[in-house]
Image (cartoon, rainbow, N blue to C red; front, top):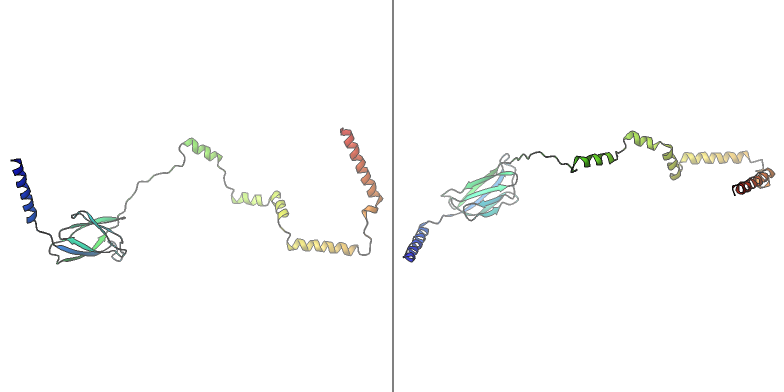
Length: 211
């Protein structure tokens, strides 16, 4: 008895399915653009057939799409940054249906949040106290005109034209002054020899006194 009931139900379902008319096919075409401006094209829009097995299509970079669907199919258009739009293909479409899909931009207001790079307040205080502040313009100018900076620049930078001219003029002046005079030789000066001998003897005395 159970087998007979099962066979009857199977025949009923087959008969019902056979009586369901096949929906006509339709060439569904169109273009996707911005609802705020018809001249702005929305490319690469996802088109999902909600009625027939979730079949998905994608419009091209110009927003154009064209594929085969059935009458009374529900098609859902989605794109990032735009609100979804659902379109139903009407009956008696004469084997083709063309439509212009206007997608409205979707504005999503995200909640505000604050980013803290320190896990605790104590870590922030520690890093803040150890932080080295950058010099302002006044401090930089003060360091640039300090004696240490000027001496370091004199030792590293080459002399300019004015310094070279002054040195040449001084050397020329000394040659002119000493043109008609003999330049003294320190090796022939007895006073220089006496001073040298005294410095040597004083140095020997200081070393012997320290011992």
